[in-house]
Image 1 (spheres, rainbow, N blue to C red):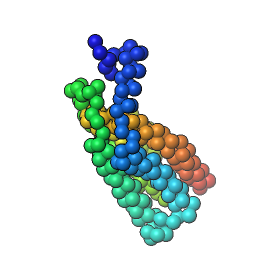
Image 2 (cartoon, rainbow, N blue to C red):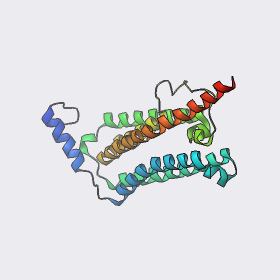
Image 3 (spheres, rainbow, N blue to C red):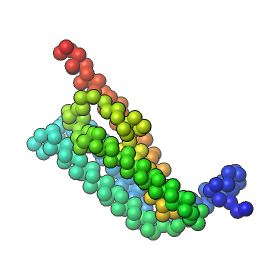
Image 4 (tube, one colour):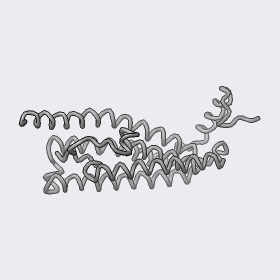
Length: 215
């Protein structure tokens, strides 16, 4: 039997993984563009959101906190569309691996896409536009922590759902390059969370402390 992804012998696993990596065209223009968008987007929204928190620049520009948040939401959404399009175009130029060419892999890809979209859409439903797009940096805070689905299965369903969608599309298309990009997506989101979670927690802790003083 030849080496396949489901053959767990160390030598076969190494041969399979090396083969997948070697098939990736790292110098492709759209591959580079997709990677740049994936790196840039979370850096952008973290920098801009913190700038808003400290200077209220978007609130002043848009004429109000809610309008400023909507402006940021539109910008982030547009950058996300550009990222997704560049990823799709990058995948068109990348080779399909015979290792990933099976109905089982394609079905796994469909499952990942479905699960990812459920996490993203239900997260947006629970949080609304301002909750999804960093409204807390604008002083638009939620009354209580959301614990209903999907937050009872994931602390960060937007990020996890997006990562699953990238993974699912890559498996469905049988593209090793997509798996590399998916790993990079996961890495960038993990880095972003190290900045976002403590800062957001501090915002709500400050709000709770102010409420306690009034009581």
